[in-house]
Image 1 (cartoon, helix red, strand yellow):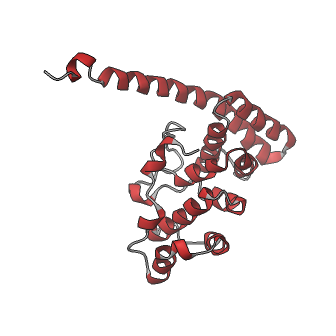
Image 2 (cartoon, helix red, strand yellow; image 1 turned 180 degrees about the vertical axis):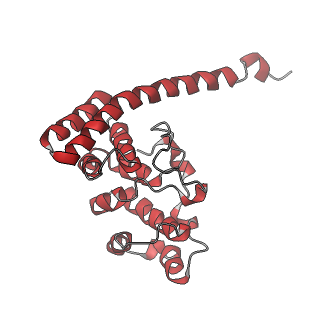
Length: 213
């Protein structure tokens, strides 16, 4: 099921209108590209400072996540810390993380990877374990995992704690940090969501204000 912010992420058809010739052809003809070709293109190393190439990659992720092609999962995970090139803002390591259901299109790969639901969990755990510390990528992977487990957040924390107990060295440390981050940050997000809901309700016009005179 699509999360609320999917509408904020630009569709594949409009992403790459101004890309270099080769990538422009790949994106323009995206509908004609087979899943195997999308996987091959997504597996390529690209210059991540090139916004046009990033937009192409995100369009391939969108196509593959819609069909829930599991081959794309580890490839999408590589981009968990890459901001949407349309936002004109590189958040860096010390970035604030938005509400897990209201990413606002800031990190498109999170949106695409949680489309796989439970199938994404091992990939997200591995993405965390592969980081040398609780980097932005590890934080985003943690929030992706917690979004998948949103009906039962303690289960997400338990998964991370168990993964930490099975790991060793730096991986165990990062997973332990992620479990603590998930515990405290998820509660903050829930509080934030309640506050945002209350503010939206307070800002809404009363029934008397909306009645025609």
